[in-house]
Image (tube, rainbow, N blue to C red; front, side, top):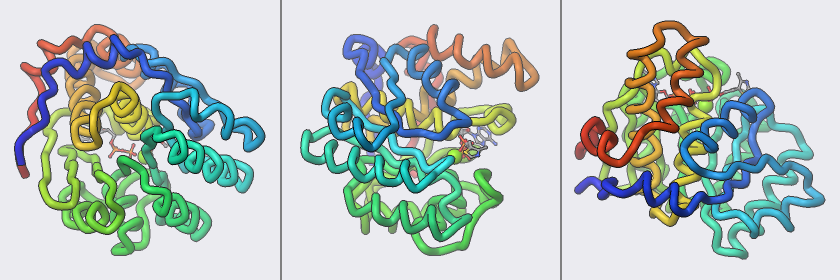
Length: 265
Ligand SMILES: Nc1ncnc2c1ncn2[C@@H]1O[C@H](COP(=O)(O)OP(=O)(O)O)[C@@H](O)[C@H]1O
Ligand SMILES: Cc1ncsc1CCOP(=O)(O)O
Ligand SMILES: [Mg+2]
């Protein structure tokens, strides 16, 4: 499959400055909001069932993340995703630790019925969501991305969503074609919330009008290239987290095109 044209993806996102509605977990809310601001989007974390139906239609994209799921949050997710469908707003699902409990798996399956544009998870999460393996190690993956490639393809075919599975190399599929994104740095696994940030960045590109394959590829390439740049200035997690935000802010179209390693897989 041919790679989407990412040559103006970042400038397009920055021109649109999309409002991204996040129903996300309490661990990563801050870093996710900062990453979205750094890249040029406008984040809002709006959670209450009483208001999400009113708020989602104001946004350009919706991010739904199961990280610290509660019953009230699940109700909000159902209202928000219904509102997104009604208003024609793209939305993305991050099935954090979906294999860990029946509550998460049941919630994820009910959300899948509402047709996310993109699903982004680590390898264990994609395997669990596809019904092929029980789970990961809490929120972390117990599998390499390559082990979930075919499960991702089957899940994409079944759900109609683009599926992105992340790891040392990321894979993105629409159920037929498959792209590999070979950017990133191991330090991404030593700070919390980088998977959630990947999901939110894809959400921002959806909000800027990119289709599912292009948004997923752009979001993952941007995070991977930014991480590579950050790792040149910072060699341990604390300073890396700060450097990563700086790199998301300074990265431009030309550097992305030069450094992104996207290929058919
Ligand atoms: N070993 C690795 N080397 C380089 N990049 C990695 C590695 N593992 C994960 N990444 C990157 O870290 C980000 C988060 O992915 P991942 O760890 O799979 O998600 P999660 O945090 O949801 O478990 C992605 O951008 C991915 O490409
Ligand atoms: C540690 C933790 N616990 C519940 S959600 C969460 C953050 C997970 O973030 P990511 O999936 O990006 O690693
Ligand atoms: Mg995750």
